Length: 190
Length: 268
Image (cartoon, rainbow over all chains, first blue to last red; front, top):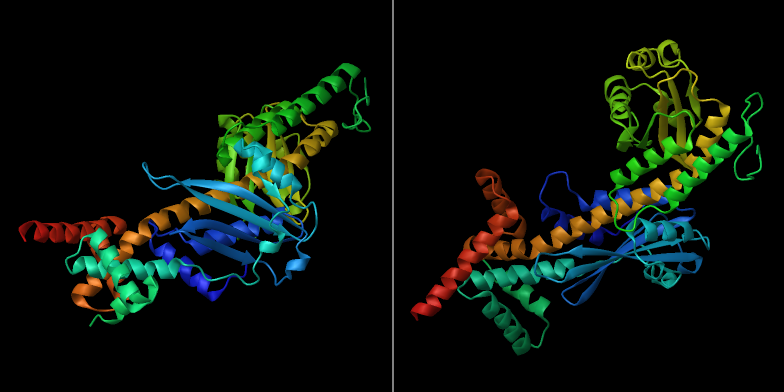
């Protein structure tokens, strides 16, 4: 499995937030990839996609370097998660890629009857151009920086809502985005 | 009538089946394959699926009294068992003997050698000098193990057992192989789904917990300086010392800070 260093760092950041010493996102992802290698002829990679703070996060792993033009087929499958009792279900999507046309047809059929989802929800061949070679960094680290800055402001005596408003006020005043303002807040610490 | 169903092999040479028996065997196999294909209108945990496959295997293979399905990580040392299920309790007991106690038996042989393995007299079976007699004393005398084969890898095995001696002939083995082929694909695809769902659950938990942990890190850094790694280490130390989940420690720190902020607002 090949992932970028930035993605590996992001997965490590998220793994810190998991309870249980055996949980490790990179390992879980690697096992999924290894199972796909065994079960899918001409498999080349996968991505897991979700929304975070209105940004689309794409976690991609490849087996080998491959040109997008070599992708013969793709399979997109929804994996719905639940955040908590009151929140909307978080939406995750798994996309698998293979070189040979038709390599994912059987898996699509099995996923449909294993989950009871209509076959129409499992989309073949519409994501062939979506595979990024070597993976991309994600907004996860940026979100982490912003949340740390919010924590600094909360610790200085602001409520959570006031802290968010203050961060946005400073960003507007300085003509920069929220991330740059958050980095400035953290840099100002002793 | 013998051989009228082209999808089922006729009786193997030397094995005589009546037309009625051949038809019945074919019907059982077809029904089991149909049930395999029709599994689930909802989400099935992997072990429940394996249990159903084991049950269908008993139906498909003539002479079977019980069956088990085992998924193996063949690339791991000692071929680590990843998941297993049994149609009957006695099969689970035999699995314990094979995988945990003795590390010897028909499933292990079938998986390593990638071939169907059969025994009609386990008590005196030379292939498994410890497993055979031990299982024989449980009253199980016949075994049929079918590797679950994908193009590049063995992913596990279906193990079928019977109380009678010589319960599984070549015809039973052939029917078993017909059943095992689609079962291998189905259970491995189920394993892919289970792993994808596990990844999703971990991501979900991490994405839910990380924001409050980061805010707590910010509070700690604001109070005492230091890097984010140092602040995280402090949170983890508190978690371990107080036997409280790290996310709960973080949430408490953030809630306390917010409470103080609201209190100041009320007083001013």
